[in-house]
Amino acid sequence: MSSSPSRPTVVLGVTGSIAAYKALDLVSRLRRKDIAVIAVMTRSARELVGPASFESLSGNPVAVDLFPRSKPQQIEHIALADAADALAIVPATANIIGKAACGIADDLLSTVIMAATAPVVCAPAMNVNMWNSAAVQLNVKILAARGWTMVGPAEGRLACGTDGRGRLAPVEEIEAAILKALGWSDDLAGVPVLVTAGRTEEPVDPVRFLSNRSSGRMGYALARAAALRGAKVTLVTGPADVPAPAVGTTVRVRTAEQMLAAVTQHLPHHRALIMAAAVADYRPKNAAARKIKKSGTATALELAENPDILKYASVHKKAGTVLVGFALETDDLVANATKKMKAKGLDLVVANGASALGSDDNDAILIRKGGKPLRCGRQSKRDLARTVLDEVVKLVARPR
Ligand code: CTP
Image 1 (cartoon, rainbow, N blue to C red):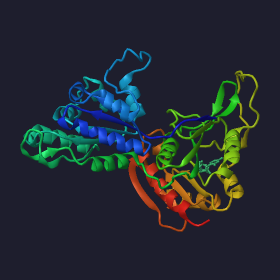
Image 2: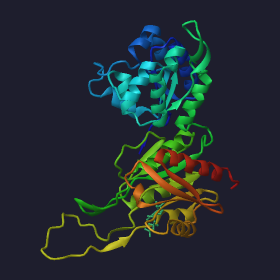
Image 3: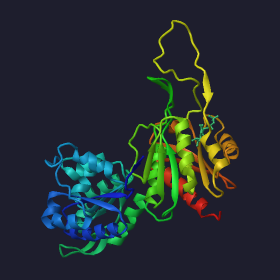
């Protein structure tokens, strides 16, 4: 079992516009919400504002080098990209906008932008004629089409003495866009939420096992999204293809029986269980203690049924504990998922097809007890996690 802080992290790219000093106010605002900020400053930004100001307000060293001598063991731009729950570029010059749109990665910030998969919020600030130029307008369109959130620029008096569009948007607007991109809210503040993720592995012998293709991405997205809304998350995870997110407490298991034991232990202390793990329905009845050798003839593996963890939870849970299950179906998605909801006594079922396995996207339907199915359409697992949690918030708010 391991514990880690679940504070969200914003990687803040600061580029060389006169408005760079305004990003300091943004750092203070985010820090007041206990959001961690790591500033990445370009060389021109450092000409305008000293990194020490960002360092003291954020409490983190400012990243400036692609290959810092102090951290030879890590690849700085990848570590920063991976750390980001959201990437904000405040202020963004015409230059960084152009580099990002064209895929140029020639310094730390532009390589972080290219390597990051987190949502991006970009607040341009520049001279009005630069902003209106065909190049910048085209580049902004390209980035918006890639899903970037552009905030501003605002109209008004510019640093160069002219009036027009080009001022950095008000910091509170930028902050609001960042919070939205993070999925940050306090609607689950302090609520203990138990999430299972990954797959289980059922040993056949010391070198072989039965398992499935679940990657862990959906469960991890749910755990992270719950933490970003203030929930006290316990993540029970089987093996997965991607690293587990930093959430409150992480319990690692391998088999369905171990997962059942962990869920049984933690469930009484939680208000909701989100069972995203792909639990193997069967395990070899007698796992061999030594490697099974070829016998030269066909053979059969005798299987025993694994416990159904959700069913167990629905029988043993405290009244009012919210139960969310998944249904992976290749046929009759809604009908089969509704059957599972009734059979396992669930409040909500996330129904999806096999195309979700191993993918970053999911095309799910939410089956809600007593409500209409909600077709989410194809979206990233991060966005689906937020939609699922919107429903969990409503369920948790019900009187017990
Ligand atoms: N589940 C569980 N314990 C199991 C099997 C599944 O708790 N032994 C949970 C899964 O985590 C998921 C839900 O039950 O939230 C449905 O899982 P799924 O594999 O779709 O369905 P099964 O119940 O296994 O039924 P079937 O394989 O017949 O579709």
